[in-house]
Length: 358
Image 1 (cartoon, rainbow, N blue to C red):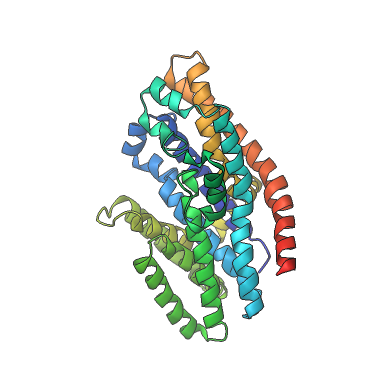
Image 2 (image 1 turned 30 degrees about the horizontal axis):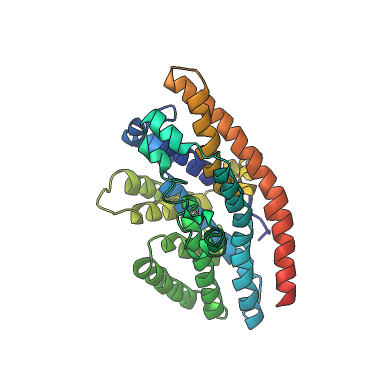
């Protein structure tokens, strides 16, 4: 397979946009709809459901990580470099974002507390409020930078909570790769299913999509040779919609984890959907998806709230659309710049230097 798969990038981009729109609505109380209207509209909620988008993002990371790990031999050297590289690929980009939040908070640029009072919307302070900003102490900031990828964000940047599932999940995938490296398909399938239920049931439902990403990758050639791809795609997508809309007995986050797996099953077996997801704009969003995920909340909690307070427009829907447009352009701009300079340049250099020394 190619180093990058276009429709995978496209799905990553759309998932990142969904998370952004979900957090914008949650943090401001408004999109074009009010937050209550949003929750009451199942179709709109499905399109920008942050929980579902996160599970899709985790699954895609599992698929991509499997692609990268599978190219390497199952050796001690592979284990060592993978452990270090996967951690640094998250920790290095997180560091400047958290430092930026630190500076913005010190300068009084986080306006979500002021907005919460202005709009009577207490959800606006679910990030970066006084209770969660104890990392202003240098030790807390350093702790947040070092341990956020491992699952301890110290309440600083709440959206990065999901990164621990990607990091630890990539380590589980590495274990699977080592164990199943010389197994035949049936043995590989049996071990994968065991790990799937072990991690998902014993640890967290968010590991289901991560391990499912490995399983989709492992049997990708078999899937591509199937004569019934479109039939399987239609069934998988139909089951995803049924699971999301009609089976309320499945608890969260298991419901969105299952839905994400079924959606990806429908995409990976449907060349037409893959072609649509490979449109250039979706691929470009996929390229900046990780940094978009990191930068959008600081921008919402500063710029978006500031605009709401200071733009003199009484019609809340018109104001919300204006603020959303300005915020979207700003988020994409900073995500692009951060991708070019932090993720693809500085991060790569730091990782290469660290790996050269171990």
